[in-house]
Image (cartoon, rainbow, N blue to C red; front, side, top):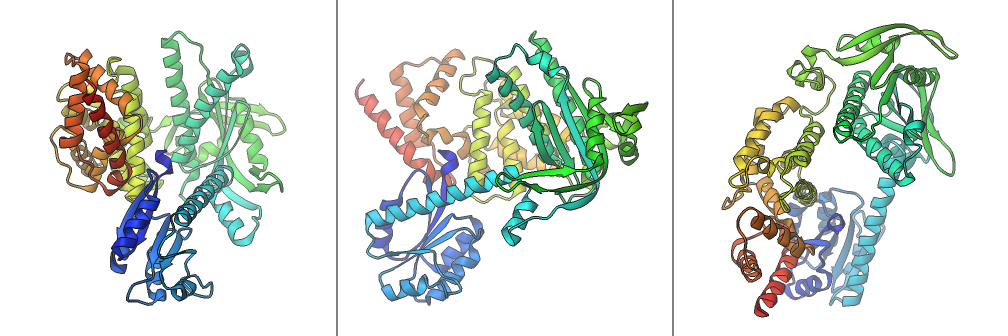
Length: 561
């Protein structure tokens, strides 16, 4: 449900009409903002992204002026504008297609409930349908290709120079999987390939396809960032290291494991879309075939590269020469194993993670958020006490998901979202060490590991402040602190509230604070009614109505004792 919440702006100065409109469209999936004037609407449009606007034309301005202000303020060209008025002539003028700022649809005042509800639901469905289609296209074709189709209706093949082609597969895959159930096999492949997707996206490469257990990606074909050849090497190292970590985990648990082979080559290729019924983006050329042969001639958990590729990366990476290896249809090719990043270009000279200088040269974000995220979630899963029924690693993931949605609704910048997501991942990490007063331990853990992932001192200071905002009795001041607090207690307004609250009280009992059922209900009523508040407009719109329903339910339960 949370991913189905949308921002709606109502521009209306008639109190009675506004109250009627709100009563018709109030919904847990609607994050509604109200502007009583055109100027207020302009200010809100600067700070939020709205799916559609319900805009009155009954102001002391021309319809053209009002709609111009609204349209120019919208952050997305796909947003709909529903004009309203008691004057039919104004409506006709407002939706006139010849009008440079015409609205999308209209509602006549006084509002008719059935018409209002049907139109709002229509535009809501159209928005989510457009989102699904967009996401589907983005998962099939590169953004650049989609833009070409939207402008020209076609995309022509293009020659690309200095590209890097990466292939992976799993060693003895058929033998390893012959006794696995099909659902288990698909699930495990999906787990690996999903992580590979994250790594490929992180280094701004393009995934081409998977065939069975094989995975293919390229650098320098669709992205504009510099040095795709070096970024591909970083991606390969991270993919290999991820698989090695999985192997160590499986060995510790006494389970079978998969080993990986990786091969990379570089050269000039042709890229384009094939097919008329089902589109497919692909690349062609001898470098593709040689990259595949490099992968086939690799060893378990090794990255095998051609001499051509080696010449491009040898200044930044340590490699081991293998000599000349016979390759089908290509004769003998000198090959190397790509081992690690050179110490002077890696964090703490460990050879695993690029340092700030290398990341800057490649125009990568200064901090490795995904690397830090993987680290802390793995640590939480391994080290949190199983008695933590509420403060579990799943709780951390749920809080992060809520932070992402509130960040979207509150129109955070990418850097602001990066800060608050990091805070969400570490806000309860102190529970690894101690149950009471654990926030400082969580901050200490964050400060200990964050520099390894390229976090600056300024960012660490701000993230520390956001984490401390979740302490009992603390009052958030900034928008990021407010989002963090609202996300941490998002469950208070969700339909799974009672299950989550039970987990919290059961956890407290296991840690020495047992309460009777009546005491539990009483404490919840006091907290919801007298202590807790949501801080952001979005949380108040989206979760406070549910919180009030939970409070009403709890009071009824208390009466029955």
